[in-house]
Length: 326
Image (cartoon, rainbow, N blue to C red; front, top):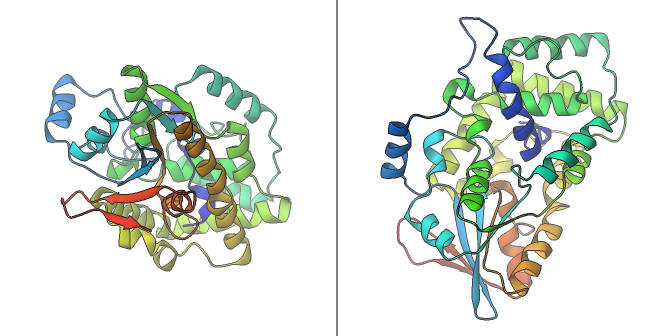
């Protein structure tokens, strides 16, 4: 999967577009997320188990938490299991890439999108993109206000709806709702402007390559295969397989792919780590939840927090002793 198509902002944009798709009658349209019934909510709470990746980070006599999320998920995965509930109960601050329920963040996102630079695509590439929009049962003009890079990012976020993987059930959104409902302090570690800058290419040639590469992944079916694999890894909490992401994702084929991956992960991680450390140093017990790919390798958040003097312990859901990063 092209690294361009993994972003919390894209999932947020996609969530707002799904309702529009419901008005388009077509036998092959994916299901549109509906408000769950009380019975389904009760079942989700009753049957909740731990998913994703959780670490305890400790310093100065206090503990905070790192949690690797999935930006599009199944409804049932949004209910935290025992280990996550314990970590949440021990926290007073929820730190997310973006708090998508914050009206100020929503306003900034709207303004940033209005100011974005949109690169016109060649006719053939635009036709392919338009066909992809139609295949996801969106109205023809649904994405026209977005730059092409953002359009393919949104389309990627809609890719798994036939499998029940929907941006409406993104784990970050669940956590934001839980944080606000429980009166935690909910903070954004990044800004919409930064995430947009991360997604947008540096020039037309890069835009054409990125959009074409993403469409190749969609049309071949490889993107869906990768998405399904990533979802299973997250649901199972399979950190070794997540750590091998670059070996199986098929997403690092060119120098541009490598540069995009660095821009989306490595370049952002130090600032995320600094923001988490600042909150912790101010006396807060932080539950910091960001995309799971930010957690792996020597530039991942667990490693960066260890470098900042934190004791970092992986919380294994099977009750094995926690793994400690020196």
